[in-house]
Length: 133
Image (cartoon, rainbow, N blue to C red):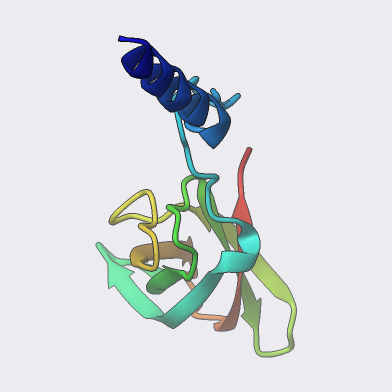
């Protein structure tokens, strides 16, 4: 009987010291992994071109954002800056991944961003990533 109590006490001590009983600040769950950081995100590929939608010209950029971390990446923002041939900023659009909204661990998510360009002056774009808090 004493051996059984001693074994149970040892097991309880091991569980208490293992860290799996600590609660995190985010949503009070056990053993939660931290989300992927900005350093883990990258643009896999992106393409931009003009597109006529119901008589209005737009410049669209679409592609994929990659996540090289072993944890998911929620709340990612993609900012597209659109420039004319002289390098003058024509417009900016900020969007989030479309499919899926949360980038899976070591995975990718599709995005697109557009800007009205009635005179087709946009010739290049620049993309940047951020994580909104």
